[in-house]
Every structure is written in C-alpha cells, then in structure tokens.
Image (cartoon, rainbow, N blue to C red):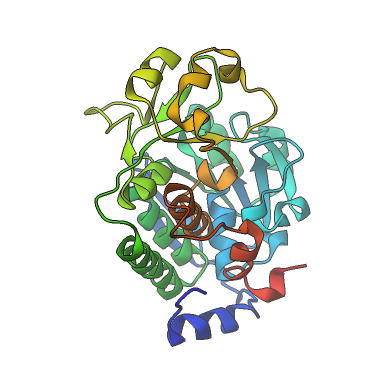
Length: 321
C-alpha cells in the first residue's frame, strides 16, 4: 500500500470529481525545452499529446480522457500504465511520425510534444495551436515537466504534491533495498546493436537510485541520452539484469550467439518492459517503474508488480471504466 498523506488522499478524492472551470481566455506563460516562452491556455479542453507525458499528468490530475488526442508507441496497444484509457482518445499516429493532418483535425487548444519528433515542423504546429516542446528524456526534467503541466491544468499544488510524493516513495524503497548490492543493469531497445540508455535517462536514473550499476554509464558532455552498444561490448560488461523495451515481436539480439552468454540471460533476468519504461517522466509512469525496478533488482525483497492495479491507485476512480 502506498503511504499517501491525508492531504494527498483528500486531493485524490476531490479530483475524482474533476470538471475544469471555465478559464475563458486566460493564459499562462510556460518556457519549453526550446527556450521559447509560450502563452498557453489555462485549463485547456483539448490537448494534442505527442508522447504520453501530457496524458500521464492529466489522468493523475483527474482530467477526463476525452480532453486528449494522443500518439501511440506501438500500434494497437493501449498502455496498462494508463489503464488502457488511450483507446478513448483520438489517435495522432505513431509518436516518432505524428500525423500533422490528424493533429489539425483534433482542433486542440494546446499541443504538448516530444521535442525531437516535432521541432523540425515547429512552425506548422504553431499554426494549429500553442505548441510546447519538451525533451521528455531525463530524470531531472521530469519534475519540471510535471510541475509545468499541473499549472496548465490549473492544479499547481497537486503537481508539487505528486513530485514530493515520488521523492518520498523513492527514499522509502531505497531504505528497504539491500545494502552493498549493486546489480549491473542495462536498459535497451531490441536490435542487432541495441540502443542503450545512459544513467540520466529517467528509467535508468530510478534503477541507479535503487542501487543498480548502469553498464552504459553517464552521458558525455553535450552528448545524447543513449548509445548503440554491440553484443560484444555487452558481454564485456556483462549485465546481471536487462530491461528491454517491449515494442513488438522482433527481437534480433536473441539470434546472436553472444546473447545466450550474458549473465542476465543465463539467469532468467531479462525483462521485456512496457511503455512506462520508455516514457517515464509522468507521475504515473515513474511510480510504476520505481516499483517494477525494485522488484526486478531485488526479487527477494520487493513483490512483483501488477501495473494496472498500481495505476488504479493514482488515476481517480471516476475516470476508470
């Protein structure tokens, strides 16, 4: 059971009856990760979400699903960490190739987008609606992103409470984790040369904070949030736990004979993980990743996680169907 404070419990009860007040023409200034100051509508009624971040924050705050149009990670999959509620939202295409025509047809009041997939068409997005571009990559960015979006949805105090709550939960888990045990881990996309994530990546930061040792290491100055790592390099560093983003049945790394030599493979500690591990910056995703990471690192200490059950503890009951 999560240890929510009385204040947080009261907030959840109140937000179960969320109904946005009429904000009229009110706007607030938000500076996005382009460094652009954008005047965005307060309590928007229609949000085009290019990535799950805005949906994650919105559902945690009690914003109804019909306020969103959203991209998908894997076609036909409505993520369990969002209780499958994306099935009620208009699709905007795959997040790496969002369909501008569909975005326009959604008639959004606001666009909240992953920067690297949309910045090349920023001018086109800005013609449709106020456009916010976030990196949605690193742990240190998560708290600002949640705070910004909570302000936009008219619930700044709740955003700060969600951030504080996560930090406390992380501290609670760390206090229970075995001491002086640092399992080597890797977080990767499937591939012949797997793209793997540096420690600043949000999911990797959470695993590292719990005591894991990321074989990929930190980002270089001005470098990318991840890198390609050959199976030969993986064998040299020999991860004990591997997290693979489950993006479909294509798993070419398993065809390489080196794969079977890895400690994680030999010991049955390869975990194909859901979309919350890809986009961990929202309050729902990062809480679930925390619990899953603790179990996968220390299965004798922390219980297995039911993703939908954990999501149901955060998303107000009024939104659940």
